[in-house]
Image (cartoon, rainbow, N blue to C red; front, side, top):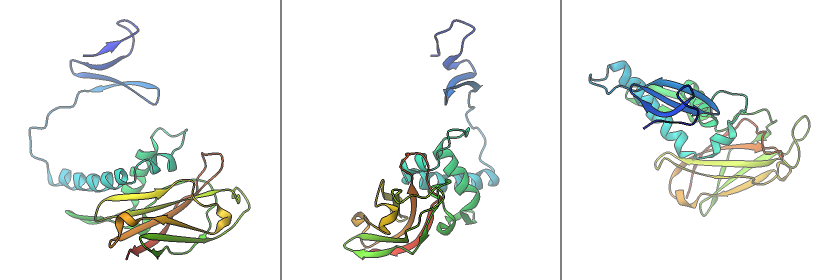
Length: 211
């Protein structure tokens, strides 16, 4: 049932006949009600569906990280949608039905903050993943910037991350990923400014086999 608080000429939320009213980011809109599919999907549709499923599952596994790390208040898309769009366009490889992600091209954050020279992540033992970088300041980079490390396990389609980790000046950070012990994981690192808004574009820090 649709509801309106402004009379018959006002915006409504819900479904009226074949029209759906809703609000997104403060913008009121209407769209046609989706029709139930009666025909089998075409090869082209199956191809697109396979791509969408893969990237959607990956973005979902990253949790709230991408929503914040891709957020742009001036954009018409949410952070999660921007993350999906970027990786859909740039990180898919293979052919139907065997699509996969090229992790070297995946971004888990995108921003204006200066990054640092980051070395490949390493197995720190006991399920720990060790990240190192060369501390740097200047421009919009500050010693107080904190790091976010991301570890993703393809086998389980799950991730673990550290928010507000060690400072840029520390040059290293260790993330507990014991939940993925014995698995091969993919890793990334980016920095967060103290203002809570600006981030650096993520750097892929390699594949790690956790003992």
